[in-house]
Amino acid sequence: MAEVSHVILFDIDGTLMHSGRAGVRGMNAAFLRLYGVTGALDQVSLAGRTDHAIVSDVLRGMGHTPHPNSIRVIREAYLEHLALEMSMPVPGAEILPGVHDVLDALADRDDVVVGLLTGNFARGAEIKLGHFDLWSRFAFGAFGDDHANRRDLVPIAMAHAATAGVSVPASRVVVIGDTPLDVDCARAHGARSVGVATGMFTREQLAAADAGLVMDSLEDTRALVDWIVAEA
Image (cartoon, rainbow, N blue to C red; front, side):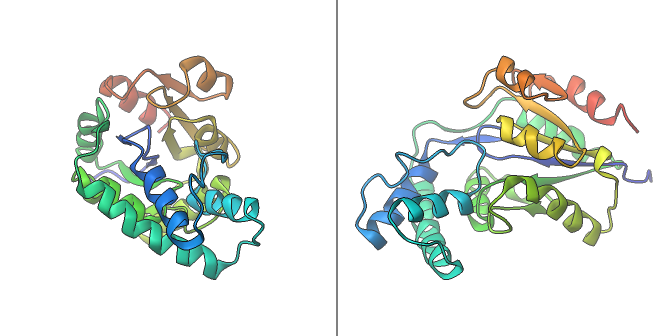
């Protein structure tokens, strides 16, 4: 058996799947239920950010200081509404092209390990991915519960990988995502990045953010896997 040489970290929304905005509806429903505010997320930047940061911004916009307990209460309400949203037919909810083939190809290799790096709360990630039977494909992850700043999720993910027995330098970590913030969090720690133009950002925007590899989608499995293991 080959020694694990690379840790691959996938974003979720816009990279692996689209939820049909179920997350936005669920979060708005939580704020409506708890604070009586309609459209709480309407004026908040969402793409590539953590749920922790998004909730904190909304609370500040309402004149509240974010505290761990208030964030926890909102998170629990949000997760209830998200589960309800995802239990119904959701227009636009889909697994993105190439995802199954890429995950299968990586699972067939014993020199890589696959995890998550996502702004979703951990249980939110499980609800979304579980809807498509993808949750079990990932050995570990760093989530929006862990830190408000996406940059800080890279070392957290590496620590979780090390706990699972996989320790590699940051240069052997690959972050795959659809936003410039995915690219940024990788670059901040010397990791490599793949920008996938299946979300809100174009190839040009992802290239401008200095993604190491830019792809229209995850459909070119061989090109992606070859690029990942090129630095072995």
